[in-house]
Length: 126
Image (tube, rainbow, N blue to C red; front, side, top):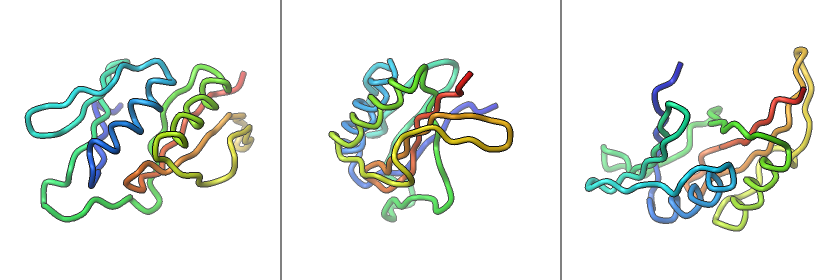
């Protein structure tokens, strides 16, 4: 459904360290910088990117927005969470764990990235 997701960052290098660590914990390669100072991560037919806002205003998080990354196991989600905390991320929501509702059972781990964007690693429990 989605071709790409791009989030704003006030300090792209700081956000790159965070995403290199968290996405690396999920098996993705480090981000690639382009000549415009944007950072791109490629995988599974989609692209995730970080950039300074084009309009020159400071980056800010989308209130009510969450970007979810698929994890292959609860352990991978935990590794993602730990890598994020060690690389400039901060806690948000409940601690990593199982959530149930609407007939689904999910393992979720939430963080805020250095720019305040809410991100999540999710594993769909069998």
